[in-house]
Length: 382
Image (cartoon, rainbow, N blue to C red):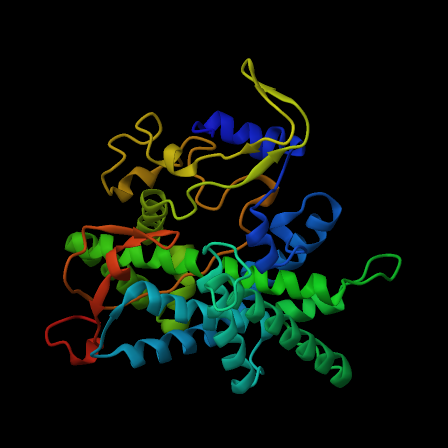
């Protein structure tokens, strides 16, 4: 286990060729062995570029109206209800993931079937790996097989109808190398599921912690709202452009996001395995040993972040030291994309000081909140 910025860079960047991605076999089996984060080298580079092209700023800009529609519909459905922020955000991030992967034209029946089987896999992903019928892992294996069948059906339909969308699935289907070789259905299926899974708990967890941190400090929340309204009035833009402006023109909001990522450290560590005997600062890491850079330890080190347990967005007014802020990993295996959603108003219900792990750290019970639209809140500026 490596808990310094220098050691993390050694494993993930400068000597990355000596450490291959290696996850527990039970997890690889559920995601699929061809998923890009289980590989390195040429195949990994090809798939990563395809994923990045679908999550590039230009591609996301095109999808902003559709993402806005998903977020607006979801927020309307929450109006007046008490719910778990984490689980509600998982539902919304799933819908956004489906949109990015399949575009706008996936039938409701197909989407519901994917959703039902996906959450069975999600439930069994971190359970004890056993083939005993009826257990969470056994059910997850069956659901993952059904998901592969559904994805194969969708791919076959697209080939027959010759309908290619501007989405991730079409990027995979259309790709071929100089020799005319294409990705196999299994390779595409595993990477589709891998991208969908990668965007779920992590995105939902970050947004949940942002809700909590802003609730705990009303002045921060007021500052974020003020910045949003300043951009809105200055540019005369609607909600779709406002969402896009979050990361482009809102430095304070961006600092809040960065501090949430640091404090929560959703991805606490990553898996690697030494492919040869490696020496680091006089210590031998034998071939085959598992190596885990601990991002949480780095993010919570007073050496890199003074008073590390205090939520302080101002620390990101200047860039942190290299290799000390790693919310999306580092090197060629860093996360190729991320999502952003917003909640306009919320009320935290019950205890919100405890933490649970599922396996990512989230507030107890997923942070129970009651939400309502700003149109119904007297005296609150939208």
